[in-house]
Image 1: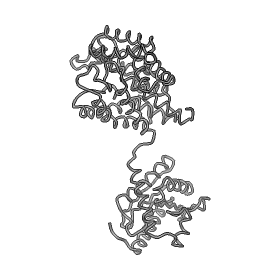
Image 2: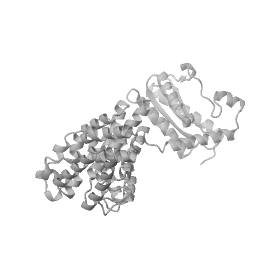
Image 3: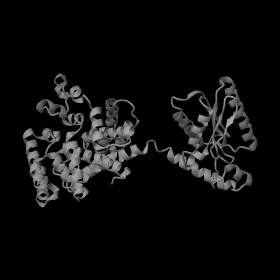
Image 4: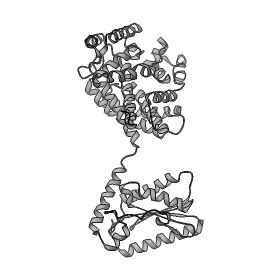
Length: 467
C-alpha cells in the first residue's frame, strides 16, 4: 500500500474537482461525489474500495426508479478511491438521501458524500437544517475538533480501523434479519423432530426406530448439511417480487443442491429429502409473507404455500399414466396405486393436517404445561390419526396405514402424553413399530413443519407484545 503525501492528496482533490466540473458542464445536472474518510498516509486498500462501492450501491438502491443516474465514473487512486455520479434529481433531495447513507451505521461515518447542483453550488447539511457531521471520537462537531487538534492522529486512526472492521463484519451478512430468523427456525424444527422421544418407529434419542441405515447422529449431520438450503429458501422467498407460484421452480433448484449435500453428509442415506421439500417451501412462504405484510401467522404461511404449489398435482401426478413406469418415484407409484397425492397434495391444499390438527394441538398441549419434548410427541401421534403417510404405504399397504391410524386414535382418546395410559401406549407403539418395520416418516416431516410454524407465530406474537 503506497504511502501518500499532502501534495498527493491536494493533487487528487484537484483532479476530482476537475472531473466534477467536466460532468456538470456536459450534462447540466447535479453531481454526487463519493470518497472515503480515511486519515493517515495509507488511504487505499481492498476494504476501502469495498466501502466506497457499498456507499454507491446504497445510493443506487435509494435512487430506485425515481432518480435517473445518467453516468458513473470510478477512480482508484493511491489517495483513495472515488466515484462521481451524474443524477437527474433535486439537489436537496439528493443530499437528504446521502445524509441518510452517511448516518446508517457505525462504519457509515467513513462515507463522505458531496452533492453539487447543476450550477456548481455545493449543497451543505446546514442549508437543509441538518446538524454538521460529528467527530469520529467524541460526538462534537468534526470541524471544531480538527481546528483544536483535540484528538491525536493515532486515536483517530484506531477509531477508523475499528469502523473498517465493523464494515468488514457487516459485509459478511448477505440477508435481512427475517431471513436469518426463518432459516434458523427451519433448522431448529428439523433438529427438534429428530430429538423428540419416544417417536414410534422413528429415529429418536433412544433408538433408530424402524431403520437400520441411520440413527440420531445421522439426522444431526443431515440437518446440518441442509441448514444452508433452509436459509437460501428463506432468502428466495424474501427477495421474490412476483407471484408465489413463480417461486417453486427456484426452490427446486435450491432443493437439488441441498439433496446432494445431504447425501454427501450421510454417505448416501436419504434421511430428510421429503422434509427438505416441505420445509423449503414453508421457509420461502414465511419469508415471502413477512415481506408482504410484516407479520406471518401459520394460516397466512400455509395459504402462501398453497398458492406456490397451485396446480402441482395436475401437472406432476395426473399425467403419470403417460410416463415410463420404470422411472416413477415411490410417491408417484403410490398415486397410481392408491390415488394418494402425498406431500404435493398436502401443500397444494394448504396442508390441512397441520392447519386443522398439528398446529392447534401443539399450541393446546404446550399451554396445558407439557414439556416441549412431550408436546412434540403428543402432536406426532395426533398427526398419525389423519395423515395418509406415504412412507408407511411405500413400505407396507393401506391396511397397515389404517391400523397405524386406529392405534394413534386409541392413544389420543386415552389422553396421549397428557395421561399415564397414553404415555405407556406410545412407548409400546414404538416397540411394535420397530418390530413390524413401520416408520411414519411422512408424519415426522409434518411434525417438523408444525413446529416451524409455531416458532414463526410465537416470534410474531412476541414482537407484537402479546406474549
